[in-house]
Image (cartoon, rainbow, N blue to C red; front, side, top):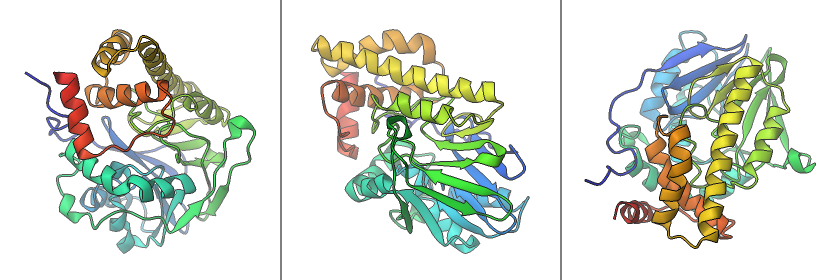
Length: 329
């Protein structure tokens, strides 16, 4: 029997945790589902990653309202993927007037946002069970430039004062996508990384830049964060735990890409490349959340990059199914 496509068989609700990490920073996590971060100032609130649907966002808003009645003025899109951004419209009623994204993320929404929305809705039926509440693509109202500190470039940086807490937002370099954006609360040493960092969950690399990703992780390590809200997995507290999450993500990326380069050099087909990769990845990561969901997309992208395809190919619902079928044959 072939495996159910992507996460179509994952229909059980996850346990949600809303926890305070510092004086102004909170983490909203759910057992391997996409995380969100919340920064609560004396004047305004910022949400990092909007959730998959407006309906889902209402749960996060309700939890925020148990600790603050300040307006949620800012929503940060750490990247363009549908499970992160399509809930943004729910925050308008809570005072949101600015949706922030990097230039790279804005370009990716233009280039492939429509295809990504359809693709992800079919991959994640539980997360999009209220898809009718999504009004359409989410567009940023504030676009910031970028740069790669690992290469000595000066990044475009947006600094926002929420009242009593300052948030720095910038693009630290390519990794999970070419437009990844972080939120950094320097005074409290809390990092909101989006999917640049994961812990004990699948690291989705279907739209990644694998060769550059490790250097971007090292740029984040240089911040010396003492707490991190990763894209998936539990919030990590303490410098040692933050480094554990960075190391976990780096090991996934480097192991995956090394296997892909070996498969490409041997001129394997995609199914053989998957089997070759599993020999290395399964013993290390095989028991983590959404491992089986991520790996087919990851191997496909890693093999492409190893073959010299620098810009990730656009995933469509049709391409998803064709790839999945080829690996099940």
